[in-house]
Length: 287
Image (cartoon, one colour):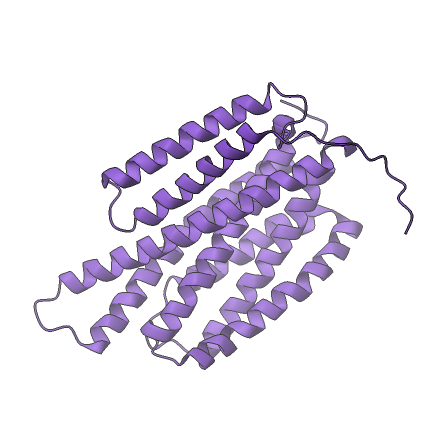
């Protein structure tokens, strides 16, 4: 294929690379350490170093001619809202994908193979519906995807929050399918609509920022979800005044998973509000 674009040599800013790596890395590390305690000095110091490094990174981008990430994309409110919705989807997706297998294997006491087979239909549904959602977006726009998608996600998380160690396997499969369908609708509609808000010269920067934050937020979501599950499990087990049995551990893991799904439910309600506000803002508005 012939190259029809104009190529030019880009300057790579070492300082930006170092500060962004330290910033994102230390923030993710601090959330991992928070599983032990948020008052742990190492947790707080790591978080502070990460935030300070990111502050230097952001300031640096405003002073160099070829920034690693062009932060002017945040002047477009619909892009900012669409980005927020995509990140919320990532939080729900990553949190569910890390906690649900733990619940299935330890809470419901199923085998690894059974847990994998239970999650397979939902993953397949998510992949298939992302293509279908693209066609819906082309024909009807994001309004037919984002708001209904959050209603679907919230409904499924409400049921996930009420799981017990004896919940029906069929129910879990159906809930996972519904949840993954809702995430596919939101993700496709929000991301495409967010990027469409930007001028063509900022498409690459908008995509780079979305992909960068997805990695960071996904890692934070996993660490936070495990922290919530662990705290819920430990709280339940510590309240027992007898020898802990496998049934107690099963109940403890299920309780911790319920706490995680409750947190994801709150995040999803926030996404529902943002999606409603996004409908009411003019696409041409800039901050």
